[in-house]
Image (cartoon, rainbow, N blue to C red; front, side, top):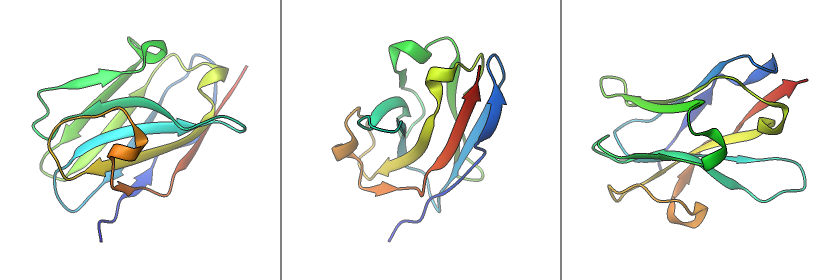
Length: 120
């Protein structure tokens, strides 16, 4: 069983920043997803196993950055210029194959989720 430990959520004012962390026991292709109340879980960002490829939801491009610390097998999601519409529970997820993917069903293991609340 793969365990993912997420941290870094919280309450922030609009325009503020947060950094989410997702720690695993080894390197995986990793995605970040979010789910707001009453909405479906949506793709936010992903990084391939090699780190050579990353991609983002259009509405977060230029504001969010996904990165990896290879030494600690931790993937980060740096979120700048946060907006109230970014409010959601954020989940990291990993898949055993190396390519990044966009659908939640393509990830086998999920973190517990961390709440991000952006006040206006």
